[in-house]
Length: 319
Ligand code: ADP
Image (cartoon, helix red, strand yellow):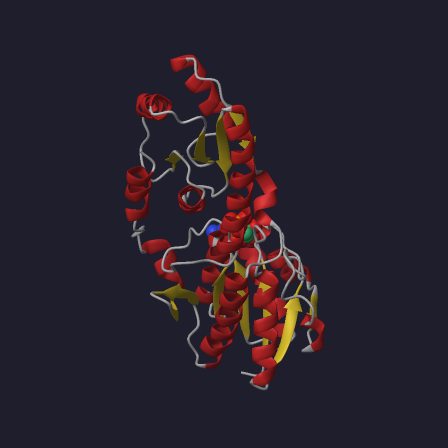
C-alpha cells in the first residue's frame, strides 16, 4: 500500500482534527502518501481530494470541528453514488481509506469495504453510541462542556431555590446525560435505555424538599424527550414549576480535552496500522484501556452490551 486517504463525515466532534493529524503523520512516518478528502462522502464523490503534508496538519490538534469539514451525503447511500466515489479513489491510486465519523459514516465505510475497497473507521461522536468501543472521540470533551454548564446552572438554581431541567444531546444514547448527571450531582437523570416514571420523579423531588433541599437539577437525554415536554409534564401532573435549559450545539464544539486528543492520536495511528496490515473493513476502538480494531459489521450486529451500572449508582447517590 502506497497511498491512503482520510475523511470526516456526519456530525462533527472534538478530536476529529487530532485524529486527522495522527492519520497523516503516522501515514507519512510509515512512508505512505496521504490525501485529505474535503466535505466527507460528498467531497469524495465530487473529487475534492488533495495531498496532505506533515506540515498541513500542524496547529490543529487543539482545535474543535474538522479542518476537512464534514457533510451529510444522501447520494452515498446509493450504489451509484458509491460507484462514483470508488472511481475517484481508483483514478488517484488511493488504496485505503480512513473514515472518521459516527455510525452513519461507518455504514458507508462498511458498504465500501463490501465492494472490495479497504476502509477503516475511527469512531468520533459526542454521543458515545458506537457498539464495540468503550469510548468515542469527542465524548470526553462534550462531557466536560455539559458538566461546566450544570455547575453554572446550579449557582442560579441554588440562589433562587429552583428546579432546573437540563436537556442534553446524545441522540438515542444516554451516555452523555448519564455521565454528566453523575458528575454534576443531578438529582434525577432520564436516559433512553431505562424507562422513567413521572410519579417517581415527583416523589423524589418532594423527598428532597422535605429534607431541606433548596434546589434540584434534572438531566434529560434528548432521546427520552425534550426538556420543555418534561417541564410541561411536571407542571400538569404535580404543579411543579421548573426552568429549562437546552444546551444544544455548544456540546459539539470546543477545544478537545487532553483525553480526547490522546485517544484521537492513538485511534488515528491504529487505523493506519490496520490498513498496512491488510485488516480492512474494521473499526478502531478502546476496550478495557487497550486500543483495538474489530470488524465494522460488529458495530451493527453486536447488540448493545452497555453496562448501565452507573445508572443504578446515580440513583443510590442522589437520595
Ligand atoms: P454520523 O456518521 O455522525 O452518524 P450520519 O448518520 O448523518 O452521521 O451519516 C453520515 C453520512 O454517512 C451520511 O450522510 C451518508 O453519506 C453516509 N451513510 C449513512 N448511512 C449510510 C448507509 N446505510 N449506506 C451508505 N452510506 C451511509
